[in-house]
Figure 1 (cartoon, one colour):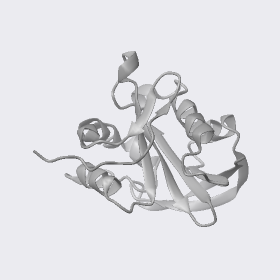
Figure 2 (figure 1 turned 90 degrees about the vertical axis):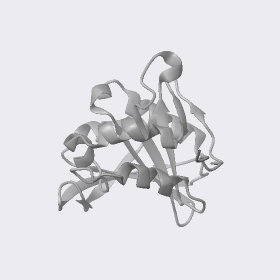
Figure 3 (figure 1 turned 120 degrees about the vertical axis):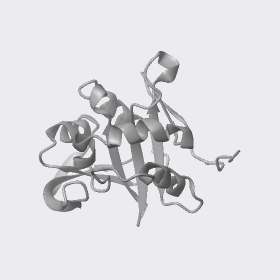
Amino acid sequence: MMQEPIVVQPALAAERFVLRPLRMSDAGLIEMYTADRRVAEGTRTIPHPLPPGATAAFIARVLANGRGEDIWVLDGSELGHAEVLGLVSLTRMERAQSEIKYWVAPAFWNTGYASEAVAAIVAANPQQARTLFAEVFQDNPGSARVLTNCGFEYLGDAEAFSVARGATAPTWTYLRKMG
């Protein structure tokens, strides 16, 4: 039986779920959700269609030592919700900055879960960032509202490549100064 590596990453409390470190046992639900074209096209890196083994490889990469990205699962199981509602991540950048990314499964859209997850990460500031950055595709105004609800300010327009879209798409960039 394969043991999961020890991840030194704090679990964070939110009102309706716990943000906890990713586990290999999350692969099935993550694969089911990210196989949805709408989820994949809302990200830069999730391919569509999702290749076999992609989710397990993603989790193994995240759990590896020396990673620059911390990922939390929105786990609602303690309150009778799904074990995986979505993911939120922080990627370390230079000069005490981090980039936040998130997605929530379509069944839980318009529930406030994304705002609650981002707010919990902002409150905890687990990477002790001075500034948080975020980027959303312009055809996803719901994700932009999540950021503004959590105190992020609009910085400007840009564009980013989306693997699922197979193209570059316009984005809005946001930042939040911490402390």
